[in-house]
Amino acid sequence: MSKVLITTSSFDLGNFAEAKALRDAGISIETNPFGRRLTEDEIAELVSDNVVAILAGLEPLTDRVLSNAKKLRVIARCGTGLDSVDLDSAKRLGIDVFNTPDAPTQAVAELTIAHMLNMLRHVSTTEANMRNGQWTPLMGSLLATKTIGLIGLGRIGNAVAKLAQAFGARVLAYDPVLNTHQTVHLESLEEVLAQADIVSLHVPITEGTFHLIDAQSLARMKQGAFIVNVSRGGLIDESALEQALKSNYLAGAALDCFENEPYDGSLLQLSNVHVTAHMGSYARETRDLMEVEASTNLVNGLRKRGLI
Image (cartoon, rainbow, N blue to C red; front, side):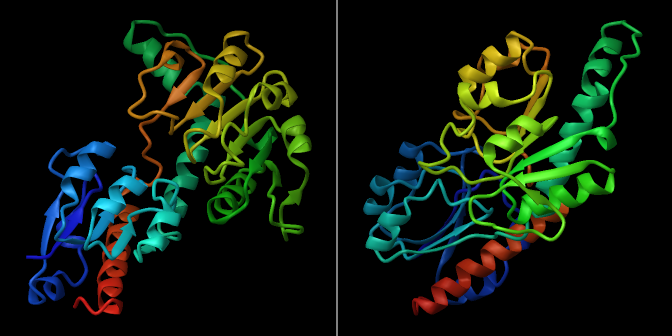
């Protein structure tokens, strides 16, 4: 029997659009047996010869994995980024790849702003102090007084800009594609780094953006500035970031994603680093929308290939 494999770490099967169409076509649905992100070896083992479609999370769908999946015809990512999929191999092997670019936008943008407010007002630090018996009000600062520098002004970058402007913050941005923008002043990457009180990353991870924020980029930032990454691990050279934070050149960093995940590295030892567990899209309303959209893409992809 042909199978659809859901590899994302969690999925509400109630959100699987047109599951009946799969059953009527004799296609079964199997879910991730581990309840976490799969390794390359695990996904390679799970993608057997009778898997015709994958509803994917962030597991590495490499050339090795795709080449061994002889009947695979559709990959539907539950999310925006496609950096976990070897797109060249997918094209060569005749596998159609879909994503859900619109669904996560608001959730990721809101978490970005939440991280900014947390750092500026010492929310998590004060909570930790109180739980340790320390009643110490900490003087913070207003988002309204800050210049926010966005690296990337796509869907999510735009949403962050609107939210930051609603607080009264000045927003400027660098985007390698855009020449003009209606409400955000565009600058070079160097100028954004130099002017921003808070730098926020909203670009995909590619060969060109890997370690985009390295020691040299960090040195261009204002002393006492903050950096936020709710985009992709690998955009920041974590060793260089650690040095900038240890020396107090940067005031703080808020990170939702890391080069290697789950992350248990030395950045966790720094009090001026605030972390979440790659959960930018993990708002219930957003997750439901993503799952419906991804499963719809999968079923439509199978229809296109004549498998339903």
